[in-house]
Picture 1 (tube, helix red, strand yellow):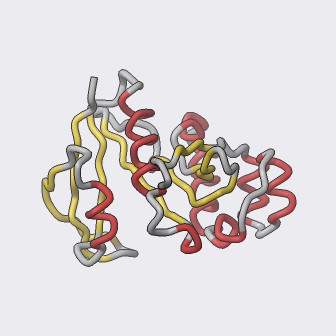
Picture 2 (cartoon, rainbow, N blue to C red):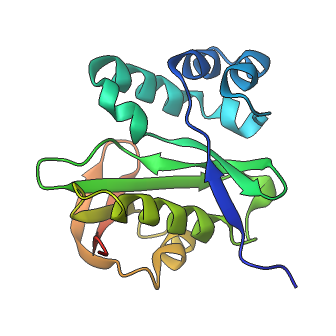
Picture 3 (tube, helix red, strand yellow):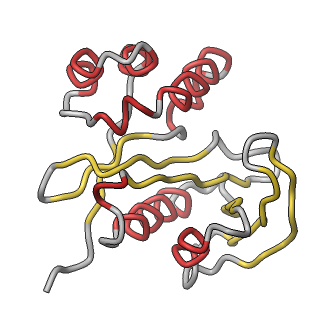
Length: 171
């Protein structure tokens, strides 16, 4: 029986992000130092947002989405990170996505677990937020058991109505 997946995140340089925005898988992989996947390249809208973000706030580079590598296989199974550094109240918003070719194998929970460990290790983080569309039962199931509780709703211009969940940092 397969054990709990282990996830390692690969920090992307501005050069790797630029190559992803341009859709250049080979250049992005070379800059990242790991074979990235077409799924990662196809998420170029995300890398464009994050490249602009770090141009205005270089400290964001330590928080933004990164390719998620399953270990010991060494294969990229998706990406995960935060929308940015902790806000003025110490809250970070978590985000993750699993490549459809690797879904339903425990990678989303493994990514979330690793991201929560990263947030919990930073004394500036007081809580982790998650925004999930009400019809996204997979994401709601993923956060179950990690201490999130629904605190409200919000309207996202891209995703529409989202439920907002919060989890205090574990110390």
